[in-house]
Image 1 (cartoon, rainbow, N blue to C red):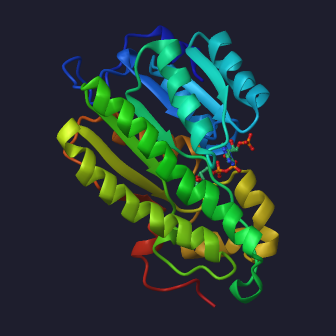
Image 2: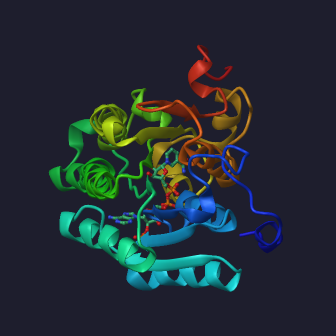
Length: 276
Ligand SMILES: NC(=O)c1ccc[n+]([C@@H]2O[C@H](COP(=O)([O-])OP(=O)(O)OC[C@H]3O[C@@H](n4cnc5c(N)ncnc54)[C@H](OP(=O)(O)O)[C@@H]3O)[C@@H](O)[C@H]2O)c1
């Protein structure tokens, strides 16, 4: 996180102190924030002055990130919880409220993948991805939505989907299915939670350089050059750029709910594949 930014004048999401959701009054949970996109999101929210709850399956990894945010001047606590376990997700939300008194923003970011042909996919590999990426997001929205509805002060839920929730990407059957499911679950929760002034949106990134892309790239059989050619912006996205988009959605100073916003460097807008 950027201590200088934290030390400067308080920034308000939406650019004004009258914003409905000033970040320095907000408590945010970022699931799966031990590394990658989630970690960048936790840093961003801490920089904006929010109370940040970091999370991982492993309590020590969640706590290590929270301690780094504290050292840099932020407000944070780490809570271990497996997002595929409903009781642990409930304990995560309860722990955030116990620590900071409310839950205002829930970012369902935790995710995994498995690479392999659909015809040979083992049931346990299918289930492992669906359990975290789809059921975990359902549990996260359910527990956070119940808390926000009970508080009666509105809220923001942002689900991290993927551009390939809208495309058939070979070797990624459970991942594509899970993210397509997240997109439509986002719409269902947006409709049901609107009466509580809880906005529910999704951000669908394209390729961003993190452990998940590093570890799966060879197995999936694409090169950096493929990504550069296919994405009109000609490069991978950065975790900072993803944080910019999530910050906007989580700020709540907008009329968006039930929306799936793509941050993919123009990939999905581009009708043509890479040049031969
Ligand atoms: N990178 C990309 O190009 C890209 C593109 C589109 C969408 N996304 C999405 O962005 C999200 C983050 O991906 P990333 O690239 O940052 O991946 P990453 O670097 O592999 O990080 C994944 C995070 O999820 C956590 N996690 C995994 N399973 C969990 C579980 N059962 N319960 C709680 N936490 C769990 C991991 O923590 P522990 O291992 O410490 O538990 C880690 O913090 C995912 O939903 C992914 O699908 C990524």
